[in-house]
Length: 255
Length: 255
DNA sequence: TCCCAGAATTAGGCGACCCTAAAAGCCCCC
DNA sequence: GGGGGCTTTTAGGGTCGCCTAATTCTGGGA
Ligand SMILES: [Mn+2]
Ligand SMILES: [Mn+2]
Ligand SMILES: [Mn+2]
Ligand SMILES: [Mn+2]
Image (cartoon, rainbow over all chains, first blue to last red; front, top):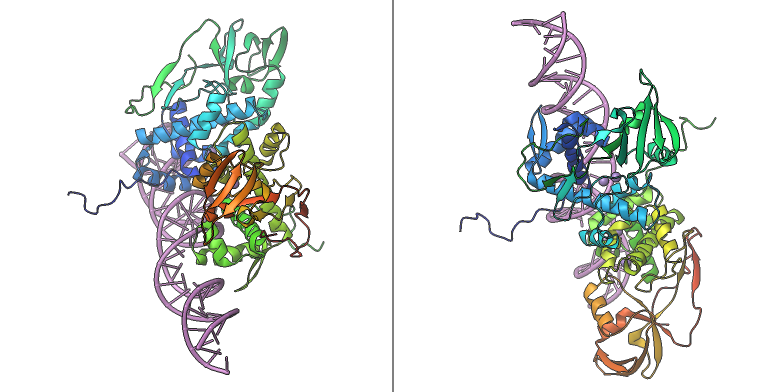
């Protein structure tokens, strides 16, 4: 008898495509730098900063995130759940389209960026099942479970390897098609073993040994490749979607 | 030197999801009844008639259709091309999701209704190729070619069959999930041979022989099933997308 | 021929997203 | 400890789709 106006549970409408993209972007900013600034989001979403301010206010009023004006933004558990569900869809779609339909790995991100807002959970689970529930997408990024758990890892960059050291490529950014084409061309994929043969000084090229071939790459490219030490094993950190925020997720950086 | 302000070809933005759905609805109204009235579109799109008027004016101003106020609407070649491209996407998606991922045929329409606006042409062609370029979707509707040609057929309804006559089910409406589940349950699919054993008078049930079993169905259900005479062959009419409108496309009705 | 029921359009608004320009706040450096 | 530069927010608009209510048109029957 305390409800002022009765009626059914008042379910609010499902998040729109822009809302899902904003929450994904906040998740990725928090992961990378520990917090999400207006300008980071504006850059990630290709939108004017003023637009971010407006959207962020609305998302905060809907309980998706906390906003301290002039101080940035943080996902609530509710917002994190939407972000991780969207990321799962994106990465399952990328995996399926690449593995089953042969969509090239430099174009699949763009496709998934649209389909992630249109595919039902049921369809995404069918795709995941068809692939045997893969744990990473074609670029090496971890796929959250349907329950919202993700195995984020702290990884070093190929650019920071010591000369003579060997590492395994784990992950490549999926956002730059030209880079992806080039990386594939020189034989680097998630799983590839690489040795850093030498590093020229003053931002000069790095010499890599991939299989039995040596290739020179610029430091900008090398910085985009996330690697694990070949010895290293099981560095994964489990990270629940609905756990209260505690800031313990380590940012990606040099180990 | 005649262009007032120079610049590249001025390509207008791709049609939005609502635009694609409106044009599809106009196509289907024209097919069914020869012309598309505001109220038909409002009913098909679950939208208020005033909204249709507004949208229709915008679509006409963009060259997708011709609008004679108070008289209804007609697709231009440009509008027909968008409609047929969207219908192709929809039907290829339905075929792929059903055949490869096992999405049940009573739920696949809803899924395709969203994905048709998000999937790229490239992806749709990959799906079509994976299936060997099917000519009809899971409900028996013809799939337009990538070039915009569709083989529309004039089909009778099971309800209009003469007692004792045999026919082959060609097509079932994809819009009613409960009907689709029931139709599948009694063993009717596109391709099934049926005999009309008897028809009770005054809107009473029809008795059908499906395989070696007899089933009774109401006249409302029977009216939803499009059939071809078992003898009949190659009644298809080729219908080009970009051909100037001439009103010769026969409406679906009793033969 | 006139009238009227139903169909269609106009009038007036709203919410979601986006933009540019102007104002305000924050913070680091001198 | 006061500026100045960068970041962020506010102010003011715009488009697209949709709605309800009021008005206008059309076509068929009396
Ligand atoms: Mn991606
Ligand atoms: Mn997206
Ligand atoms: Mn359908
Ligand atoms: Mn649709």
